[in-house]
Length: 249
Image (cartoon, rainbow, N blue to C red; front, side, top):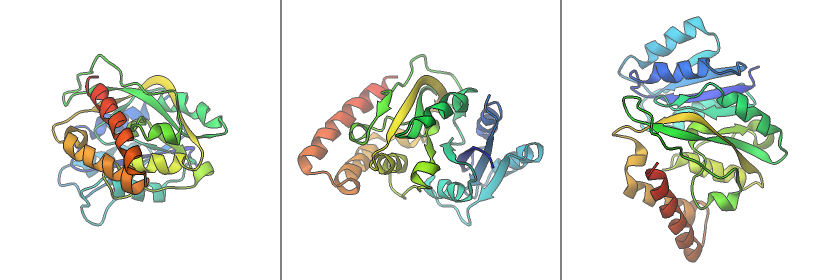
């Protein structure tokens, strides 16, 4: 069985998908499988995956029954079909750097490490890399994670041997909700402190709608996590500050 299962949701991503797949193939750590879950794309995305799967048996293509319009369901299909102990996530328009898995897996040996993640850089639609780095604390507890989603989904890996398979809710910031659910069990997230991925900013990126993101964050703090009004306001203030600083990167 592979040690790492890479989960990639995909919808009409033919422009970037090959780069995402090749960034996994280029990993210096080779004990992985990649599960691309196509959300009923209308372009050539599925054909791209099939082409790579013909040459590399570690790559698999799955698909939804109908378009879901959300990455949560495709990711959950990938999780359900994953064989690896560690589940890692890569969206179809993002890129891993070659040492991502090699640098992250050793941190999983830490007793209370259920999540490992890394810093990353942003790139634009044409692949131009931003000069600054989006950094995060080296160790993140549940309480600290309430301040902001420090764990960029494209850099996260979690350990199913410690927390079993856990799935994404169909909510805004579904990745953040999942990380909180894992750390709430008493585990912590550990950052390699190295840049291991490139996050692509495109015109329709979810993160580009700041008002919607703030609504999602408020819902998470008040209703998913059940914080009191004063604490929710406090953590929203921290979130706003961190969101502003991240947008400057």
